[in-house]
Image 1: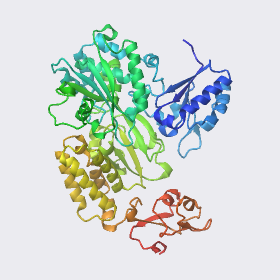
Image 2: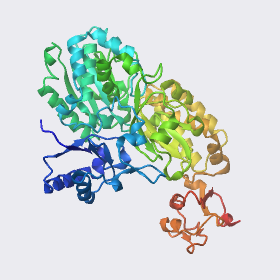
Image 3: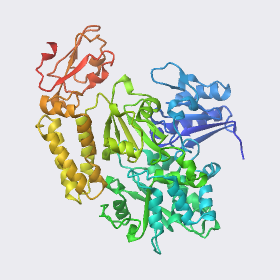
Amino acid sequence: MQKYRANLMMCAGTGCVACGALKIKDALKAELKARHLEDEIQIVLTGCNGFCSNGPIMAVFPDGIFYQKLKPEDIPLLVEEHLLKGRPVEKFMYQEPDKKTKVPAMKDIPFFNLQVLRALRNKGMIDPEKIEDYIARDGYQAAAKALLHMTSEEIVKEIKDSGIRGRGGAGFPTGLKWEFCSKVKSDIKYILCNGDEGDPGAFMDRSVMEADPHVVLEGMIIGAKAIGAKMGYIYVRAEYPLAVKRLQIAIDQAKEAGLLGENILDSGFSLNIEIYEGAGAFVCGEETALMRSIEGKRGMPRPRPPFPAVKGLWDKPTVLNNVETFANIPPIILNGADWFRSLGTEKSTGTKVFALTGAVNNIGLIEVPMGIPLRTIIYDIGGGIKNNRKFKAVQLGGPSGGCIPESLLDTPVDYESINATGAIVGSGGMVVMDDSNCMVGMAKFFLEFTAEESCGKCPPCRVGTKVMLDMLTDISEGRGKEGDMEVLKDLSADIINTSLCGLGQTAPNPVLTTIKYFRDEYESHIKDKWCKAGVCKTLTTFYIDETLCKGCGLCLRACPKGAITGEKKQPHKIDNELCVKCRSCYVACPVKFGAVKIGPGNMAVGAESK
């Protein structure tokens, strides 16, 4: 085997590719060739590294040096200084928010060193299109152990003992689901992987499928042996073309290596896996709707019982788990249930992957032990709030989840604690909001999504979400009335209690949590006709506090309509006749000045000067 003195691990996940990673790869390849280094230094295109906001990303091993936000023109200097002269280039390194020093090594960056990688153990470390890379990091050893040395009952027991709960949202015990299906007598059973990730701001499953597709296959092989399935499907939305491509490459490679297909590893066990591309309907994330979609029917949920473990795909016993759940199965089989339980809490064992997005400095894919406080995730791993703004809320669980306020930032991230707040852990979307967000607007945004994505099968969801959305629209446009919040709460209870599937049963969560924790904002919208965040245009007037304005001109340059006037180093003014309420001035004004203010929508022009 050829040994290189350096490996350049180049992130080629969707985010970094969109930022130009492949151009960086081409520039590196050309520069290494020009310097006659191509036989000494290897370029490895990996999947998602996780630090998505800082792409294009490259890590240099064995040095462990981390480079970010690279451009093609940076490459000659980087090759000259680091790869030829052994002097890492500081200007391309990560710098913590509000700190002047650069951090050279990945192990010293809080975003990385506060994580514990299990499901994501191979991220940024292998070429996802080479089965040899996966095998070199213990890949398929767990499958071999399960197929050659364990009975189905022993596999199920190990998964049950680990306490792992489904990472797709509901948190149902995985081992219990497998046990139910394993006991059903049937000549045909199916194992399914749910890669239909539809939550706004979520990219956990996509990143795993892109970075480590073989771990999904290995988890499915073990699950299939446990329940007695001979056929499996990976349901992936067509909007994930890179994930689909890499999964298909992995399937082909596994078949060629005798790790999929007939008589795997001469064990007498056979399994075939196919990819099914979904059309992007959010409701198809619900297990029975997903199964109907694979059958070629409209993706609509059906009543339960019977549960899929008894009557699922084509009315045969079926187990469905999501991508992250399957990614956890091989290390559990390889290392044992006690190893998995060594992290997390008693009822929420192991780790959880989150897509950390929104108003944090460090946006990306993270994996943390269950039970870690929200504050640690947002302020330590996430690096705090952008532009030194004030934290307002974090939305957990996507459109099915809820908003958690600052007063609950020390809440442990586990299923029970998060449920107690009114939110849910969900599949792992974590959207951070600062004080420039309107909570009525956020509730409206998520309800717009669920109302649009409702399959329409049951009236509580189809009609109820639309009625609630109309009420929120009225509130955000100044037509709200006394008693609207109570009506919204009553409607929410009816929708939760009578909807057919999880989409309708959880759709009111963002509304209920924002009313619970941010009632004053609803009252301000309804009584004062004032959106204090300046998001709802009808209820907003922008003005400049002349006693705070330093005349820096940032707001003037940001205004697209020329509504702001003023001389340099002199207080500026906003002409409300020209103002289109785009918030550009508010965003541009430095937080330390806070000169751009937000008044009620019915504020008289010129009143701000009083």
